[in-house]
Length: 292
Length: 292
Image 1 (cartoon, helix red, strand yellow):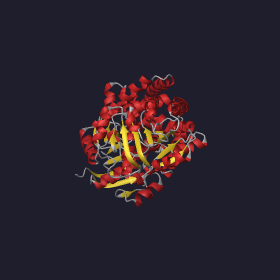
Image 2 (cartoon, one colour):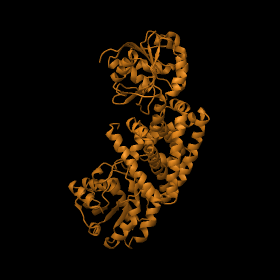
Image 3 (cartoon, chains in turn green, purple):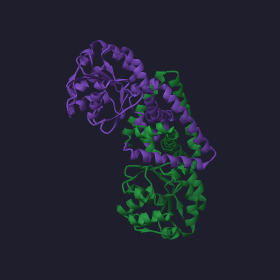
Image 4 (cartoon, chains in turn red, purple):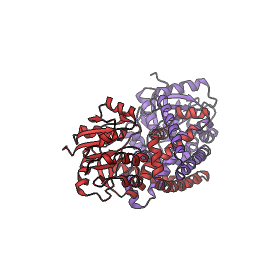
């Protein structure tokens, strides 16, 4: 891999930020990898894990002279971070973010981007249920999609940025912000909301039953509890900031669930069988698309 | 492992039936392992895979002289199978079933069990999204719970049957049928219904969006598609036969989902954060219980 940036700055050393810093250094995509986290414990943890070249105690010095700044903080914190770093950015540098919602981040961040600085929003479709610096690993992005919202970016900035993401192992794809938000609403946000809900329903069961639900947790529920163990701040912010697309998909989901509920109540076996057969095909398509 | 039964008969060579036959032979729990499936292709496949000692073309000869008969067919087919084999059973033999619903199977099967034959319903909490004889493997039950509904069984039958299941690698636990049905409604049946629903919602999206949902399917949705690829006949029968407990849990789930939907619409961030924090603890409990 060729060096792409002399210095990159990662703001927010969570699962994604730590993985970017580790992978960028490991693959020699940047001459210097600086990182910052608002949480002092996270900085200490990142230092003890030797993530990147430098863990900064000040956000301003972290971004100084950086050619690429990656904001990997919860989407609700993007505006504050942008305001904080605006005065320290190098002319010509590229800012990206790794937030799961794109329309809201553009709305929040763009007004604070100084002239001569290029904001290219993006979203890595990669994650695990773990969080914090120690969750990061170099191969997180390998073979995963990293969506880019070009938003009018010029090739001088877009091409090296794309090479950087591909250097991390990701497959890049350009997309419009509003369309992105609908795609992730159904593939990621709604599944998380539902997993949180059903695990919450189990938490509220009478005590004996709740304990046996934990003891005998079967495939299905176990998968849901893994999803529902994801970072609460990140996911609260996602639902606050992609509310429109999530509520649209939730409305469709509710209609479909009511249809099945009615079919169960009235013993309409064929309706269930038809759906259960159709959903099998989607799984085949996903396996064929190499996404599992 | 000591030999427990001279002959066992497995009816229905799907994921569970095939795995029982393979494991029982491998662990020498039975002198002779006979299997039967109503589907001739499944029998041919089982023969070519050398599952157990014998694949029978007639259900009656399969169960003749068997000391243990395991009904691993969809729960909607249990009554028919029981009626078919009733006249060929050896006096003193034990019948079990591996259905995911217990009240309905007891209601369907018990009236047809001949005098001198002992019916002990059970349910292995083990599975994958694959089905058919080729999905079976010897270690499917290792470390998984296998729930037994003693339903008045005497120790002479219950003790060796329990040893057999433990010999397959399972952890056994006795439980009442009605309570069983509520536990699996929340841990298994409702998660499957919801996974089927959300994948169905995605299937019905406009064509461009649907294709991108498949291409960019993220963690969360991918897990759901795996669950929603499970055997359609088996799951149709589950919902037709555990309707009461499933509808009860679905009612609770709907209330909880409406609460979150309202919180998103009214931007009540704290309500989401509180739930997302509570659900994390359940995950910890499950990991501590050794179920993942």
